[in-house]
Amino acid sequence: MTVELIRENLKMLEQNLGNFNAYSLQFLDVEDIRAKISIWRWYISHAYFEKGVPRPEFPASNPPVPWLHSQLQGLSVPLHRDIHSCTEPVVTSFLHTEGAARRIAQRMNMIYGYVSPEDAKKDQEQAFERNIGDPKRRKAHAEAQARLRAREKAEKNHRTPEQLQKLGEEYLKKKNKQRAQFQKQEAEKLKTEQERYLAEGKRLKNRGIQA
Image 1 (cartoon, rainbow, N blue to C red):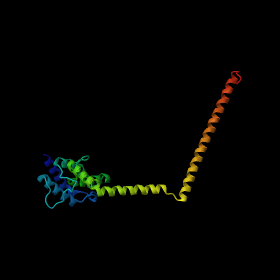
Image 2: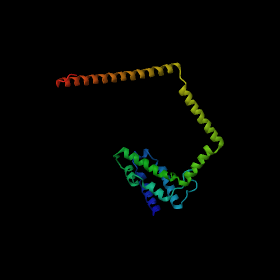
Image 3: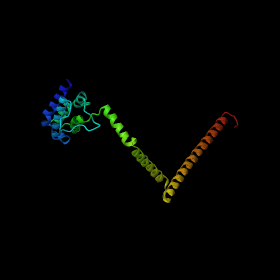
Image 4: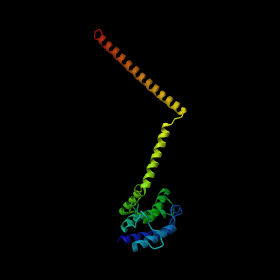
């Protein structure tokens, strides 16, 4: 059933390629799409790639047919809707048409886009072996990291007289600003206390109490 659904979608796409408007053709290659349709058809019929045609390169894997169906049908926008956008005689939205064309091209490329959990794990193990497992590579990697840290530290610690002077000026400017702000806050605090004292004295005087 899933294979038949894929065949129907491929047929629908193939029959409409000749009607794609000029704007959509800026974002996909019709002949490449036709070639990919043939590859899809062979693969879903035989469960392997025909000799002499491109095939996934490791860590990509032979894709399961149900996964291919989901990719071709569309994860967010259905294939038929993207085809409609690309075959409009008059483009109503350049943005939508571009997105539709790019999605169709991406759909067809997904024949090479599947990575099985087993192949993903194998690729990770091989990468680990290449970069860490080999003592020579591990040593070279550690030495490279040490050189990088030493250079960064040297650049951080080395300052020219001009840089040191500028840093000193910036520090002094910062401290003066902090000092001025503190003095301002203290003055405002003192003013508030004086106003509160005078107000309290006035209140007591009005009540006939000598402060």
